[in-house]
Length: 264
Length: 263
Image (cartoon, rainbow over all chains, first blue to last red):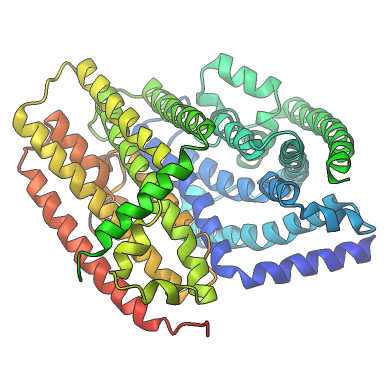
């Protein structure tokens, strides 16, 4: 299995290599949204602070959003939608390997490339600008790594499962865009959850949105205090990952049955 | 340049219209999508104004006017510009552009305007309606001079956006693999959602002089709310003319690089 994955990742890496310019474009697109949000909060904070966030806190927060969003984002619903609509799923089903493994390998190759660019940029910026430096805390970084892996896995299953809806509807990607619009607020892309009205932040915490992005970001920047809060955050990630895996299994088995019936 | 491409486009658009009218469900989906993105933008703005009373010197409803302008321009982009550019990158790579170049029409005009996504014109209507509503909330009735300035500034804004778009299309000749070049536009254009005065100095300089998106939303909205004197529209028209001339020169240079690939 490890050998297979190595081959799949190598393959995905080489395919991406052909489309270097496209990847730079997607990277830029992923970076501008947090950059603009940072610019606006920067102006609002002025010399004071907003709900405890001063300018430097916003800078750290949105740099962490850039990196962690890139590490956890999953485009799979768009691929799945195309595979199903245009029949590209057929030959993938004929392989002795579940198509999800190819998707996972693509995610790993894409994220390794783009996130490392952001990490290098962050380090360069941090050398010149103390505001975006993080305190040296390897324990916290290790915990963040775990939270990022859980978030990436969950966002993969969300995206993959939503893409599977293409078995039933032609608007699967529209549903994913709707989800992206909601997560703009609830996952913390536009502002730290602490700045949302408490009821909205409560919804984000009760559903899977905080686990997607805001929790790992807050963990990295140090906004999550105490072992208790960290354990609860990780537990919530594990629970929602489990729920999305179950949703994926149901959608996959039902969808494949339907697909087979249509294909004849 | 000759004007023969205009009746030709008329014929293309009629075919386009007939084709689109078959898919009326797309109209509903398109309007719902627009309403959703407008709601998201307004909620984002409300979140900012939950923590402040003005942004770059603008108050809430003034920025809503600007968002209306932003939406109207988005409609123009989605209806006219985006449908065409998607094809161009593929044609440059495959050599099918030969078929466009041998047509006895202006290639730039033809490539830019050959396809329409008519449903997205509703974005223009919805955007202007939002701007109008925000104006009544501000309690400001624009004078005739302000309305005229707004119309000129908005037309200039469309030209500036088009010029940026032509620059991107020209890049497709250098970077042949760029299928998603429109993403670059989306990334930059995000910045036009807010008045330029809200951004730190360096970014403001970029948006006014280098990638002139400040002229696409901030200036028309300022003309409409009376924040800037109506004469600003003349400056906007000048910027638009300059941007258009530069983009056309770049397009010409890019076309020289195209060697054709078919045959």
